[in-house]
Image (cartoon, rainbow, N blue to C red; front, side):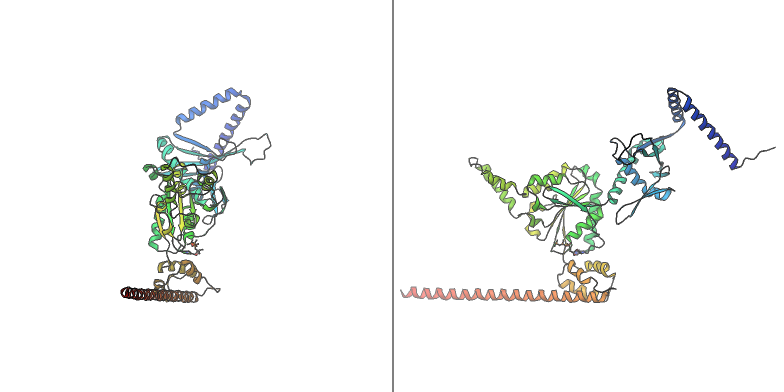
Length: 498
Ligand SMILES: Nc1ncnc2c1ncn2[C@@H]1O[C@H](COP(=O)(O)OP(=O)(O)OP(=O)(O)O)[C@@H](O)[C@H]1O
């Protein structure tokens, strides 16, 4: 006679075995002395690990300082977010105020997901221990100790403890930086204060020559991934950008697009509010990594033309003439209360090495010719980007953004006019701004054509006026020359008569 066991029977048997085991364990816990329990615990663990081929690592949410969340835990949580949303059945959601991603998802307690790295499979499980608290606390409930447990086969120990964990923490931190609310810092004297940075500019909406744009995107990507490279060549991980061009060509917009592209904070440094070089240095040291430090209109912030020459000359003169009496204290004070060009040069290169992490420094100017060459030489300002008057390709970006237009019969006329008239993207954008609802693209394009023709006419008139003025000046010069000749002749004549 054969007996058939159904799955239900097996589960019922298993359940009763487990119940019996738990009962026995409860008895042991109650009646066995503490030392004996400990002994059994210790040796049963050793016995199990002898046969168990897996290694487990636990990452607790709170470590060290009681209320400080572990950086590793939150990096792992972020790293696992994508895998969790695909594999876990129970998820936790949190709102993040971010344009690109409104929700952050993580696996709920007691869930497990797997991950594969270089062909090796590992398992991540989430869990929590609940401690019985005796005391009342104002702090958030930290009696629930959450953790992540990583499990992997012991033959992969080296790869997982080295490469894999480095990869998890790095990637997790990078995603966190991208997802966080970014900040715009401004300085009031030597103090930074900040607001949330929510500028919508992107490289997609930035109107400029597409080849130039791609070059900048590639440069920024290489820079932001270049930690190892910069370490290897022994250079501070920084890059300087000089953006120059007439007002309204998109210098500030480009900085916002750069920050959004890289996920960096912005430090908008008002140089005129900085008392001296020491204050400037302090402000720099307080900046965090993954940030863009901006000095707008650098030519207006300080006298950069010849100032350095003056400074160097003064220093040389002081060195030559040691017998010279010291300057009166009030003079020294006046000099110390300004940021000097050499202070700025130190700011740009010397002190960078003191601050770890990647930083971009961006100067903008409407008058590149006014800047001291020392300030903008390569190595300080590595990339010089000219933001020019609107060309046809830049116009097409604006037409797409403002009017959803890819092509139109009037585009050819606009192409011809843009080649002849100088108009900034800001002015082109203003003309393309819909004036009715719904938008009437053709009337916007015609408005732009009218504005371009006007600019062209004004430029022609200006040219003609200048030409006439030049001719007039030439004629006056000639006339003056003739008069001088006549006077000379008269003088010679009178001399001859004497
Ligand atoms: N290249 C561009 N692409 C898209 N929009 C632009 C561009 N240039 C200017 N604009 C528009 O014009 C406005 C002014 O541009 P922005 O402030 O970036 O110019 P700027 O070169 O920094 O000017 P300034 O030198 O006066 O500070 C922006 O709000 C933006 O809407």
